[in-house]
Length: 271
Image (cartoon, rainbow, N blue to C red):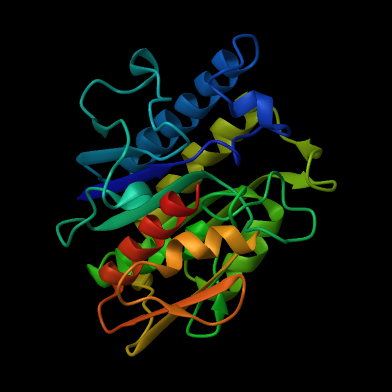
């Protein structure tokens, strides 16, 4: 059984403020990147106990060079570095039995979402696909679903997990912390979170046959609302983009990977 793991950092146990997951911070970031890496290792160990034999881990936070090699099992393969054409879903394909997302967070605008944002908090206010307001987790789940791969487990803050219970009811959701506003949280200790994640990954993979791929049915219409008008100005110059309003652009396609790549292009241009 081959498992894909996409790991972010804001949803890691213990993280509550930006400096803890900012590589420019030389005091706190080194500690929290270790916790991020240890959560990935715990999930891999748990999935292996359920029969998984092959793992591809995509470092999906910020610069995408966060994982510490000495904290990971030696037989995992890791996608590291930026810029990746498919960003947080680079390497996903039809050969995987399941996908797991660790350290994920709520979308921009969610009440009590710890460090909530959607791909680029400085430029993107909302991503809406076929009328559904999407978190990073949901967009990434749809990329997995396009390839026929179900997301079986997601870890992060309580606001995100509550949302995903509606969209991905078959997935095991592990809330390692509860937001108190955007910049504070009641959180499990890293050690406790890792123990829970390890056991949860085993359970999730044991029930993989109950999971199903999440998809958006074509025709697919994506609307991106930016934080400022000038951000939309840049995106609107891309062929195929329709300007809806001062801060909102629309892109239509029957092919979800094209929609996803346009999102990646849009937030990079806006930034």
